Length: 309
Length: 263
Image 1: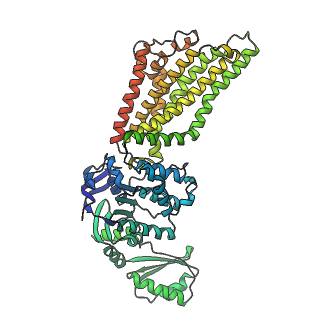
Image 2: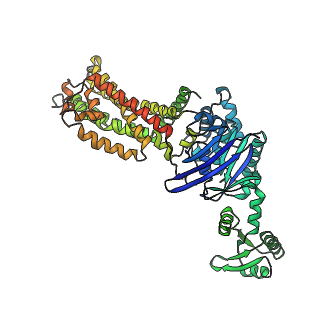
Image 3: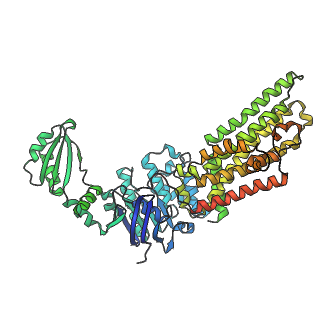
């Protein structure tokens, strides 16, 4: 399988602050998930891949060509940045048509491609509305449409599902999968594991600017499941819920946050804990307001792994 | 996409956007203030023909100074320095610089767009002034050649100032402050230095192109030792070209830190 992205000893820092360090990897067609907590270096890596940044050390090539200051390559790359970056006073239509033209879409196809891209993300009916009137979710979807309007070979998406409602999240996941199924390459960065899980099994873990691991997503899922978890449950009667759970062997500690009507459990077996919790809540008709698992994220896993090393 | 096709796209979009922007409206309103003052002066002149100072004199002694020394460089600063900086601040630079177009076409497309809009604003002021000055003798207008000269000078001055400030904006993050220091510090003081020192300002060459022989613009030659017209034009065009080339080179090679880079 041909290599689409090739990084060799790639390093980037901002003054004294490390962005990424000594990353060497190859990416082939398909969907690859770039996982890491906030500040891990994911966006830096993506920006190096789209020529927004120049490497301090090492090289990065996309489709066999160096990226920085090589604008002809960008016809084959679609980039969806993490942050909002629109001409807010323009309509969605004017913006996507302008960017489609800039990306070299032939004049005769611009309208059709722009319509197709907006329709794909459910914004065709809102095409004449100003972008500043769009919700966050709509702006995110527009950004995705802009990234794909010129049908690039390599699609690079930085937190593409941020702020999108669950229904559209599922649809965009399907669109990305279809895109990859056409033989194209999609690189998706996220700090939310379930988002990446829904897209692909191939992941690159980035932490503190380095590639921590690369391979199947099951690896990270196993790590999450096996490390100690904290689960916070908000309900009207937290002591009643704690009393129901107290004999459960998967729980190692229980404490209360009385002021906020919360009970916090520590568990060594996340799956078993949630099975028992769900059953007790249903059987005893406990009115639960919220369940938060702050450890169920990559930062917690990375902290856990780093402590363990 | 080819250089000129990209330039055309950028020029079209930014002219469309900017023509509707608050910045343009504000500058247009400011540029009309001298016109209103001139209109009042002209009405008074018509009402009281024996007045000691005519509207024409007010224009050449006061209002032209406001245009040439104040409005024009400030407008050029706001437009020129924003060519790159507004894209950095709005984070729209990422869309432009990940498109398969040369960065020079982005810079030049925006430059031409902003030059056009600023020329329209300044020339609108000149044209209205010209009409007002000739209100009482529209059948036989006078000073048409002088006004054409003003308009030509305005175009050249804007072209060189905007290019110069575009270079500043491409290199420095705080280009607006630097530009204000340049206009109100360096240019304001050094232009009055005797000898060749005054030639290190842009305003020297702009003023050198004004009709210095006209009795109406004597104030402009105060302590000015004008350079020849050809030399002044060559310097202004040269500064515009060199600034644009330098800005393009820097823009092509420079990394711009958007607020989210550390992620």
